[in-house]
Image (tube, rainbow, N blue to C red):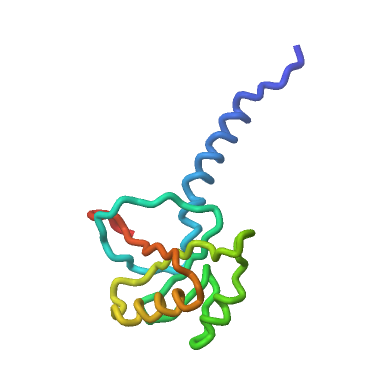
Length: 129
């Protein structure tokens, strides 16, 4: 009988699928920061969302590209809107060592640009990132 045994191939493919499913969410946050702890419940992820990150030095990133100081409003205005004209959800990741005023200043710029749906990203209490 000349049959191909596909069981080892299926096993390897399932292992690779599990590896990619575990590592894919970790690739979403490309800028390393130390997030504050919180006991808040997690929110559902939305398909179209913008990741805004502030590192410990105060540098600002939209997804993984750094924003030159003073150009945040122009970069926000260039972001695509939904079909109904609404801006996408913004997830703000800020390092816990940052001054509260700097985070609020960025949130004020987001609000001024029309981004009213802002999620603050934290780690759950007791976990490390």
